[in-house]
Length: 250
Image (cartoon, rainbow, N blue to C red; front, side, top):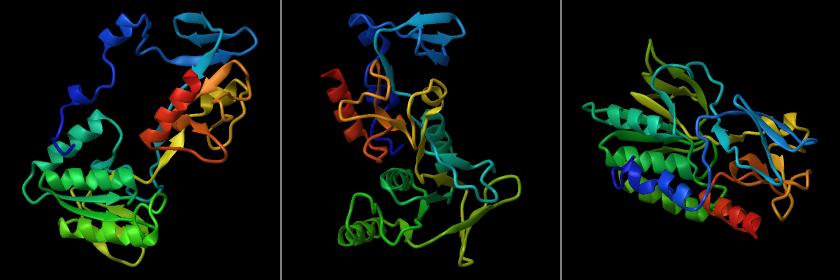
């Protein structure tokens, strides 16, 4: 988003890498069911047997259910399409962005949009930024640094509605404050994708339940990433996900 790297540079492994390591990739093929009794995965093209199965179904971004959430110009910060829409908006003169969510992802979006020349405001429900990772003092220092870079920060701010006629025009807060916006970026958290596991009878809560070895309630099914819940915790950052992958591999 900030223009520091190209999409090609951030792809972890390309198709060639998988081929070289003897991994068969079947992209664009949705899994419709897991039959645990027969140990097969079902897709539109038929059944694929497994000895061990790994669930890494990820998550979807959470969109707060406020009026105006479906207006054109309301984006999540999730994939290449989102980034391209943000870059396109930033090209307009005097373009304004409001980012809802002052966690790591929201602040990365805000910094990227600011680097693209947009007027950026961050709206955060909690008293300090990145409260899951930082204590209040560190959150204050981070806020000061971002404000020094010209990013507006509003903490303890509850979004009441997204306003606009046919397209986003602004964000109205609970206290009546209105922030003008050409785009609104929602970065308020994720919802683990648990439907496949749940339908197969694998134990789930907010995410797919795993033990310390990444094993689910079925001894032959493992799970890693944003779809899992480990000790009542779900993770949306990449570092713990890489750790999970190492544990699963071991």
